[in-house]
Image (cartoon, rainbow, N blue to C red; front, side, top):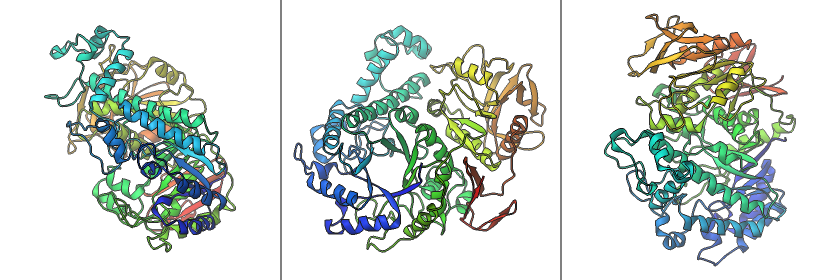
Length: 634
């Protein structure tokens, strides 16, 4: 697949007499793709049933005749005021019972039937009009599901839909639900599904089984909403369909949404995420303030490659300072180029910069673009042109299976969210820290969904924190020809959030039992013999499996039987480094000791080196400049 560039454009924001000049300039910059339309519902249909297509017809024609391929978005993320007036109860409700208001975006509840009908109607109109347009080469459904905490809604519509979802899940058997949830505790038994409310505004925490079920329901509502749009588009167009996911948004199952699409895309904002979502300490935020975390973007590249079944893009690449993080510095010179090549190294087909021109009005007027508001070049377009020139001699994208795999499970993230057991503990954080440790060792990593059952070709598979592990997953991992790493909290709950008996992990051929769990104060880590510590979370392990790492007090920290290891705690950086080295040695996978900020990624034909620091790095006879990229034939 050829590597291509693109941008996000809003012709409705600009005078029509500059559209042709913009399009020609995009082509000169080396762009192939231009995404439009995802926020234009009010411009298309300013009043119910009154459609204004002429401007969008001309915009698509101008862009297409210039040689650009259009990605057309369904405009359902921004329902106009008249839609809200028609359906005033379509507004989502937050956990405190407060309704959201009109005046921004994503102001709808996925469970509201009236809004779902409006969404299908506008999608049908757009797809009918442009489904066969030769310039519309791809589609995007809605925009950034989950942004601004908009998946989980505690509305009346959600309450009614949740009850129906539960009836279906438990075959209309309320006794089965009561048993599965353990409702005998605190006299929480229900006589009828209509008695079940949403798990918010309770005196203390709700039943965790109830809370987990509501998160699963909320995710399924997103999947259904997206599928309705996909089915409509497919009836009118053969072009591939995508959705643009986000960083560290886990409120819905991206794999399930992705199964209905041809392409997964995501919106990459390295500097904004460093301040907003990475969870880095103050020193690390300062060190990487103008570069972004060395692993956060790469993690999502690999995640969305899995979500897209191999086909994925960056739909929005940060080009300069953004407007929404606590602090919004400008990227270090060279970083826009580095981020672009990093995405390509992980298999991206396209990298599209957000946005073409900085808006001089409304909520994003402080968000930079490829051009300044006065249409002069912004720094990002200069680096995009450099990538354009470098792509001329670059080989086609040829992905290769990585030597190690890491399982990421959205359902496990919901379970940890419902019951973290300690302040600041999260499944995402646990998995991400394992990913970082693997990358620090110079390894390329494949992220796998939890329904994977074939682990052929992997030397090692890491599955930390998978709260619920079905028996067939355990069997597949047990049969895998790979080193397998479990824990902490792997297989700690059954499908309905009860502690299983026999006690976890109850893994075939692994005589290990977790007999006690504890969360640790941040200032009270438990040190390991030989270096490193468990911080945040620890488990007491018993059983006949060999103890291969211990705490300094002699208690088991890691136990192993055959090719399966169980880690009884949340390792800090030093502990994870030791665990990765031990597992890779057993698997026959060579590791590196990379300098801080240097990362590498291998494809079938190339090896890339990325310097995420503001200083030159020399490693293995190579010198990579600050914010630099080195490509080698592999």
